[in-house]
Amino acid sequence: MTALTDIRAQMQAADLDALVVSSKPNRTWLTGFHGSAGTVVITPAALYLLVDFRYIEQAKVQAPAAHTVMYKNLYPTLREQLTSLGVKRAGFESSHVVHKMWQRLQNEMPDITWVGVDTWIEAARGCKRPEELAALEKAVVIADQAFAAILPAIKPGITESDLALELEFTLRRLGAERMAFDIITASGVRGALPHGAPTDKVIERGDLVTLDFGAVWQGYHSDITRTVAVGNVSDKQREIYELVLAAQLAGIAAVAPGKTGREVDAVAREMIAAAGYGERFGHGLGHGVGLEIHEEYPRLAATSEVELKPGMVCSVEPGVYIPGWGGVRIEDMVVVTESGCRVLTTSPKELLIV
Image 1 (spheres, helix red, strand yellow):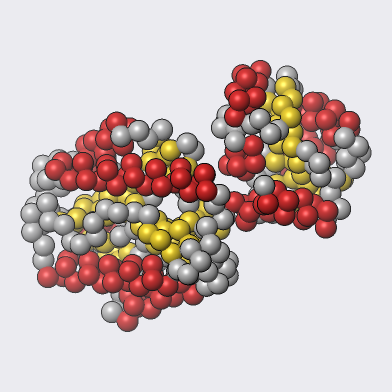
Image 2 (tube, rainbow, N blue to C red):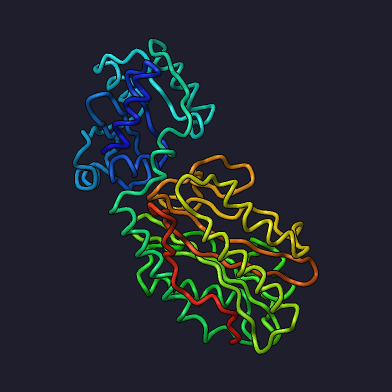
């Protein structure tokens, strides 16, 4: 794994004998193990996966490249493992290790110098391997199929909560392991809430309805947002929708290797601002997607200097949210290519009136 070679090079530059990895997504990416508990130890020569009795057989199957070690109590076993390897300086994930765990590492392994490292593995995860892209594309297909299947259910009289429930059933029937995140259904004036959780509000004729959802397939997430009109559409609804769609298409066209997240975000943001709605687009244009629904590499936002590289996967999701009126968001997932990007999401984006 070239990325693992890069991580080991960083370890060498930091004079680390080992790197202890405790976060689940990083653990899964390094080993293939999907269990809920475990610790990975990276050394210059090998990869070790420490798990308890519940996961020993699972680990052997899912992580064949790692040396599997079973523990009854993590910290004594980790201490024994690091001592046997002659570790004097070890890195830990400063973004994931809570203070209590850090104290235990210090107290139970005082002979080891602990060094916090940040985002080494997250950065390596940014460029997806072929098998990761295949899993992501399957997760997107499930979401696209679910959107097509749910359209007949979006009608006056159904509540946001019931629509979300039907969408979850549909995603599971189509093969989703679980939801990528809590489904968002926001209708009418509630469309002004970017993360509006479903309520008992009844969907009415003339509402815009925003659906934001995704599926998980083999641990990888999809993320799609579509806004549809119920029964009819007003001139202002159409105006806002067409603005958001134009900004989204421009954002997608701007995605290319060598661009920074800030540069791509600016393309869509400036279009919305020029139309007079800049203050109504308050979140970033997009985020990385993979083993986590929100990944930092790459993030499309005004504060992001992350440079896009081929194989990175992210969302492109501008929105306009007007309190007391409603909102529109349109979101696709794209993968950065050598010359631009490829859109993974295939659900229609023209304004649908259901």
